[in-house]
Each structure stands twice: as structure tokens, then as C-alpha cells.
Length: 463
Image (cartoon, rainbow, N blue to C red; front, side, top):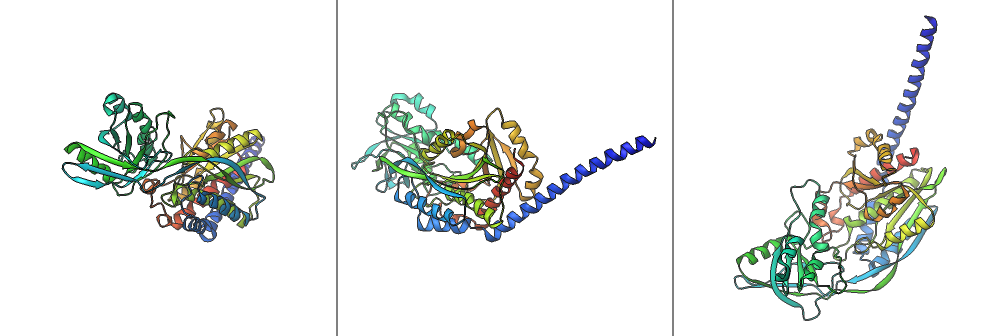
């Protein structure tokens, strides 16, 4: 009887000690995460940096003088933080030039002549000085072009499938409509079309055309392509339904010779596991028509501020925390490909790689991806920290990360995409209004705090 009682007491005490240890660890982590948020909201630098970069440098298309200035400027900012290492990783990038202001002029027997608000798509060839004219045929999909076949020869194909506004996930809606912009020109060129117009990829009706990259599948079949604003896409569709409609298109965009550029990298070396890298990053390039505030200046300053806040909090990471500002995500991924190549050649291991490329809006959580051999277990490691993250409105989902870190999957670490609220993101994406006044300071700072909180947990406990 006494022996059983003593055994019960021993087991009870051990269980309570373990529970107390877990509770103490969780309380400590909750306290430190609160400290991170306090520092980010009172001593963060991300909004100041983003204002400086977007105001004084502007749009940063790969190969442009502004992109080169952004490389120099961000390196200088990282140099001020007292990091263990700051350096440039050279890469060659494509250099596409937009040229003169685009002209897209509609002529109809009913409404006469009018100009549409338009932007050449990235990597598009130009029409030449004389421009091109042709009757417009409206389609909703690439499959419809296949069905029309030779009927599009000599015509201008107008892709007018909107993003699905009923889809709560705007990035899913964007992906569902993006094929017509990326591959639509090549599909129309297969059947002898003269040029392509594409409805801008946004969920709202407005007057701002959205540029973005296209991919030519055949080097011998390149035709010019422009995006038109959603309001003008609606107008053009009505005109086509009313009768024969002709468009005159003039662009002078061209692809120039590749240019030297660089990824910008800064890191704090780990004290216990320096060979385990936790990457935080965004892409430094942007389209030329706006100032790249949400896409992806926000992601770059998020990553920079993670290191700034670590130094400010005097945090000594166990693992190497590396900030990478990738060059040329928008129209080629040249910087990312160079980073993957160099990382594999150096036998590096990225325990985790986190990319911020969804804007500077209110944080909603993280999305994960990874190698099939390790993904399930790595993702499960993050779920146990949800009680620490949920008080800050952060959740966790599966199914994606980011383009610039996707090539690190074979290293079998965890790939993570930072996911802020996306409902307004495509109002600004790839437009002339993606400027600092579209970014809320507090929301941006909360993003840096959210990312650092997750990085802190991964660094402290591993996966």
C-alpha cells in the first residue's frame, strides 16, 4: 500500500515537473514574441526604408539604372546593421526596355475613335514605329484560340477572361486567369495573329492597366502584346459585340543585351548550428511603371528588418539567419537561379527559407511547401507553435511558398511563404499606383514582427 502510494507520488511529481517545464518554455516564448512586436512597432525600420527606396529610386526593372541603384542602396543599409557578413552575389539578368508610351487606339463605325489605357507586357517585342492594325477578335481562353485556328490569322486577339472575383483566395484567382497573359501571345502567334490584347489581372474595375511578364514559346513566333485596364476591357468587349472593331497598336519595347546585376545578402552567423541556414527574403526588382512598394519592396524591407530587430534586441541566433534580396523575379528569376546554383555548389543546407512576396498588408499567417521526404514532419513542427502565433492573427496552411525560394526544395528544408491579407493586393499589382501611399506603416511593421516571430521559434527549436 505504501509502496503504491510512493510510486503514484513519484509519477505525479514527474508529470508536473514536465508540465511546468513546458509551461515555462511557452510563457518565455510568448513573452519574447510580445517583445518582438513591441520592438517592430516602435523601433522598426521597414517603413522608413521602403519610403526611401520607393521615393528616391522608384521602379526597379532588372537591368535598369534604378535596379543597380537599389542593389547599392540596400547593401549600404545592411552595412549599417553590424551584421557578420554583407555581400553581393553577381548574376546576369535580362534587360527589357518599355520604350515609348504605348498607343492602343480603337476605331469603330459606331463609336468612332478612342484610346485605351494600356501597358506593354514585360518581355514583349514592339510593333515597330509604324505600329500594326487589325480587326479584334475576343476570346476567353487559349483553348478558344485553338478552336478558332486560322480564323485569327491577321487579326488582333483580345483575351478577356476576368479573375474570378467570387474566389476568396485572390492568388488562386490570379493563377486561374494568368495563362492568357503569360502564354496567350504565343498561342495566338501559332495561328498567325498580328498582336494580342489582354484584360488586366485584377478583381476590380478601374482605369489602371497591369503589366506583367509573358513567355514566348517559339523564338520565331513573337508578336506584340499589351494589357488594357479592366474598364477599357469592358468597353472594348461592348464595342466588339456591337460590330466590327479595329485596333491600331504601337509599342517600341525591346529586349536588349543581358546586364550584370546582383543579389544582395546579409547574415548573422549562428552560434551553435552555423551550417543550418534560415533564409528570409524578397525580390528587389519591380516593374517600371510604379515604384514597386507592395511588389516587392515590402518583402525586401521585411527581410532587412528581421535582421535589424535581431540586432536591436541583442538576439544571438543558434542558426545562421540570412537575408537575401533576389534580383529579377519579375521576368526571369535569374537571381534566384544563381542563388540556388551557388548554394548547391557550396553544399549548403537551408533548414527553412521564408519569402515575403505578397505585399505589405495585415499579416494572416504562413503557407508551407517542401520536399516529399521531409515536408510532413517539418510542417507538423510549425503547427505546435500555433498557440503562440494565433493571438497575433496568424494561421498556417499548406500548398505554397515563393518563386525565389522554390529551387531550394531539394535541400529538404521547409519552404515558407508569408501571407498577408490579399484582398487588395491585385488592386496595385504591376501598376503605376504601387507606391508608398498604398502601404500602411503599421501593417508593414506587423509583417516584420510576424516573420521574425516564426524565425525565432525555428531558430530556437529547429524542426
